[in-house]
Image (cartoon, rainbow, N blue to C red):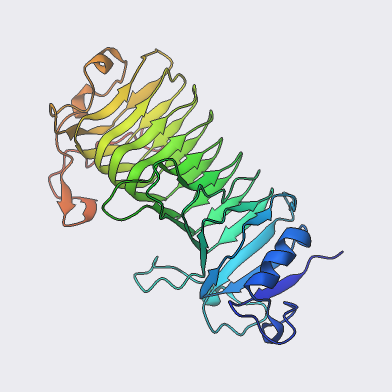
Length: 340
């Protein structure tokens, strides 16, 4: 069958076939179609509002392809264009306004997708370990997952192989720090993502996971936990008010460059075993224990950045994580193009 464009609102409309906004699917019809009818190239435009799940979503058997992904795109409430244009897309609070993304209120119902999905502008709330993005080759853009369970063994996003999360947000119960892992990553990439108010921000559970240009705040355990064996890239991140900034096991072939750490209450960067296969350079920060970003054992690590590895990076403060005038980090990073 040819790829289809379908329309979804919380209550649905008319015949609820999804063919037009006037016949939009409701939550139940969307679930049924996604689980049994979704095909490569299909696009679902989902209007703003709350979608309360009364059962788990399991679309793990419905796959897109690399050139024909299945797209689920959140648009603003009241959108009438068929198909919607870019201006109709829900932007969350990326531009400082109210969060207008459709919200899937999952409660204890898990959500699972197959391979090659594009999830744009969608918010999830859950009390179970979310499997959002768990398939192969998925792309998540401007999505949010809020883990609402007090159980510490919970995830907000579970990112599968070759999955990318871009401008995504994961958080827990604000101020309680009860969430186990906000972004649980396979061989995946997070870019411009925000992890806050939980236990561990990014849990790197497979080789070659990448955390780039992300922010971690108010985490009661760790900003980034490198659990798998090797090959991580941790570049240009900001870690603020976390107990430990970056930690890991016997990691090798790991690149940790241009990261800013402030307010780590125990260690900035700590690995249980040091090897010569790691490349750490131009990181800057301190911790409350000894004003030294490196733990006592890690001083033997060839981290190559003694000239900028300690001291307060001097953020602007009041929730602003940009660098204040006089910060020792300004003009002190590794250039994107060496030699410039």
